[in-house]
Each structure stands twice: as C-alpha cells, then as structure tokens.
Image (cartoon, rainbow, N blue to C red; front, side, top):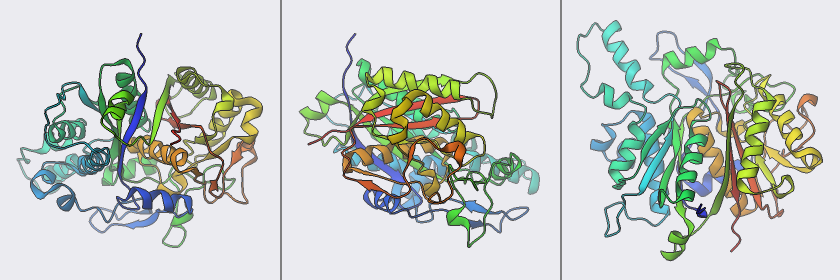
Length: 417
C-alpha cells in the first residue's frame, strides 16, 4: 500500500486575537489571554460569563456582503480561515488548468448553524411569525461550511463535515490526512469552526456545571487547566484551517512546507457520555504513535486537551503517564485553551495550528494561570508555565477528547530547512 508523505502548506485562522497567524502565535507564547467578560443585552435573561469572541471579525469585509449573507457565523469564520490558508499555500482561488477533482474538504463543527436556528425559533415563538427565511435550512445545516469552501475554491473531491463534539476538527484533520496519505486526494482543506453564543446553547452549557465563573476583572484568568483551583472551561468562537498536500506535489510547485502530519489515532471510551476514562485516551495515543511509526521518546511536545474541568484534567495526565512512562516526567505539556478558550468543534484545529507553529518556530507555548497552583493529581509531566525556546522539537501530539467518549490524537513532525 502506498503511503504518501503529507505536507502542511497552508495555515489560516480567525481567532480571538484576530486573523493574523504570526500575531496569534506571538501572543500565545507571551501568555496573553483572549478571554473576556461577555455581556449581552438582547437575551431573555442577560448572560454574564467569561467568553472568547472574535470582535474584530467583519464577515462582509472578509468574504464580501453577498457571500456572507448566505452563511451563518460559524460558516463565515470557517470560510475566512479557509481563504487565508488557501492563499498562504500559494494556490489560486479560481479554477486553473490543473484538475481539482481529487481536491477536497474535511471540516469539523460541533454545533453548526445554531445561531440561524435560534433566530428562526425567535421569529416563530417570540414574534409570532408564520414564515421563516427560505435560507434558514441552508444557513443552519452542519455541512454549510465545507459546502461553501468547496464551491468557492472549486474543489471537486470529497466534501465532508464531522460532528464529534469537542473532537470534531481533530477528527476532520485526521480523516483528511488519511485521504492524502492513501492517494485518494492530492490536496485537502481541513479544520473547523464553531460559534456557541446562541442563548440556548450558552444556557445549556451553563446547566452542565462545567463553565468557569468570572467577571470583568477575573475573566482573563478564568480558565486554569491542571490547577488546583480550576473551576471549569471557557467557551469561545473561532475558525481554523490547514491545507494538507501530497508532499511530492507541494515540492513540485515550490510550496512552503510548514511541517508534516504523520499520524492519527482515534478511539471511544465506550463507557459514559461525559465522564472520560484514561483507557480510551491511552488507546488513541498509542494508535497515533503507531500510525506515525514513532516511539514515546520521539515526541518533544504535547498540546493537551486541558479544558480545566475537575475530572478531565487528571484523566488526561494519567493517560500520558501510562503511555510515555519515565519520558512523561520530562515531556513538555501545555494547554493553550487557558488563553484562547475552548472553541468546541474548532478547538482541535486551532490547537493543531499552535502545535505546527511550535515545531516550525522552535518555541513551545505555555499554560497560563498555573505557575504556583498545580494540582498534585495532574503532576508527573513537564508543565510549561512560560514559553520555552531553543529545544528544537522534532514531533508533537495534539489531543482532543470529546463528550461521548470520543478521542482523537494528531501527530505532527517538524521540517527543518
């Protein structure tokens, strides 16, 4: 069986820090939190919670008003990120002489167009209207983002959406990787986007009692993965995209290669909808390493799932210690959600980008809010509380673990020029 090498030739995002990739990573490495106090005055009962938003994002400016009007915000964020990744890869948006029939899209979203659906419910039940916009279904469907990406970039290959809760975009990236590696696709646009600000969604998450509290003063420090005083996760919106490409094809056209994706492992705890188990995460970690053909000692950085929940954090550390053994004690680990928040279906993609940039730029981002308050149940790995540079990391893992017990682990390898 042919196993092609898979290069990462394009990266793009719309994050709480804005849309500039270099600025995003600089601020992560500086330990700058993007978490803010979210106040809304257009809800039945105002929300007052820590949140991560992309206030600088202007869909009309990024996409053009006619195209933006055809999309829910989650698809707008995804399309803008995909455009940036595509342009960064040096690929033409318009169709070229080269066939794109095996170029495709694999996208992740946990929620899809919930804002569009909530708007429709309000029109029906609060305002008493009998008819909704004929675009309602098209705006709300989960595959809207990947459909628009395929259309706008002229991609005739597979176009799929993956909804696996918080692992959605990690699974989407893993499946895209497999398609390119096997030769089914030459290029795949992959990643994810989500927007959980819908009032009903926010209230539903609040009812789960996994949300961190916070006010205007404390919100930037609300998310504290692995800390003894952690109190839960902080939701946020965003979109992130990667262009995965057959390495030979990328080299032939002179593309810049930011890194390679070399492994993907997935599993299910098959035990509980919300309570994670180390055994399932261990299987995903082991599968990812085996798929990459790497040993524990080959990994120099782990971007942890690290949501700052009471049960989740210790389970993830236990899984890492089981898989990496003595190596775990010196294995650099950080949870960038402490700064950019939990972007649900987009989380795996933005953390994949952070991992690729860590390898490429030789600087490992930290977990903030952890310096003096590590939970003893989360000890046993090398927690980064400040950025670390100069270690020349060779390979990194990015973990995504979801409600429903779904686990996905991606393996990236540095390309030294």
